[in-house]
Amino acid sequence: MASPDVSIVIPVYNEEGILRDAVTELLEGLDVVRTALHWPDLTFEIILAENGSRDATVELAEHLASEFAEVRTFSLGEPNYGKALRRGIEEASGKWVICEEIDLCDLDFHRRALELLRHGDADFVVGSKAMKGSNDERPLFRRAATRVMNGLLWASVGFRGTDTHGLKAFHRTRLLPIVEQCVIDRDLFASELVIRAGRARLRVVEVPIRLAEKRAPAINLTSRVPNVLRGLVKLTYAVRTGKKL
Ligand SMILES: Nc1nc2c(ncn2[C@@H]2O[C@H](COP(=O)(O)OP(=O)(O)OP(=O)(O)O)[C@@H](O)[C@H]2O)c(=O)[nH]1
Ligand SMILES: [Mg+2]
Image 1 (tube, protein in one colour):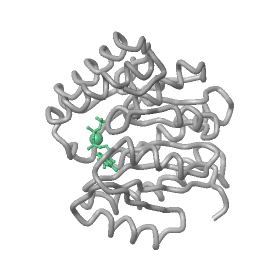
Image 2 (tube, rainbow, N blue to C red; image 1 turned 90 degrees about the horizontal axis):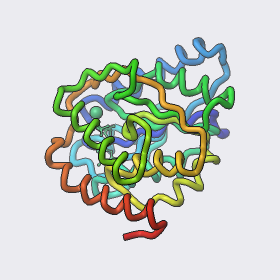
Image 3 (cartoon, rainbow, N blue to C red; image 1 turned 135 degrees about the horizontal axis):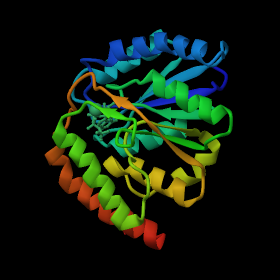
């Protein structure tokens, strides 16, 4: 396939329950995006970035890749969200990259982000579930965790946005040097990318999103806390000193 306009990178882990429906709905929904943007020949690829699944996710992803020309997949070993997302971005060939989550597939975000990117109004669009105008339907505990995480990033590295996790879209070649600078994997790779992009004076624009998950998260939030805190220490050190801890 020739390089598409847009690469949609979706990390997936133990998603046999929703993978097939989510990908087929996304493929259908992309037509709605083309129509809404008055861009009938807009082309996409979908990269399913898997690692560590213990269910049938790998087989299902490979089947989808053989069925649909727009779908590609790879598997990397042990579960690691950041590592999978990073490799997906590095494998992407589109002019723009959209980082998605399989339980969201928010076409309205795709439309708004591509509108900003194609008119040169942003280099990096971040979907925020915490800014004015957003609507976060997750339980209170997880909404509070987003606020706490953001507060920690304000205090530790001077981040001044409202959200670093979740949906993102960017101009691929403008962001690749920033991706190369990132040293953190797992949950905080996505935060490091947003923070470094802002510090590099790229035009980072937040847009409010409505967040309604198709299922509860696979990993319990409390069990992620130790890893996230370790990542935060490493991230602070790396951003402040330019060196890896
Ligand atoms: N490859 C890979 N994908 C993962 C991993 N953990 C989660 N994902 C994927 O990342 C996306 C978001 O995962 P969720 O389980 O919904 O987590 P979440 O708590 O909603 O994530 P945030 O609140 O945005 O941090 C989904 O597409 C998952 O399949 C992992 O270890 N490896
Ligand atoms: Mg989720």
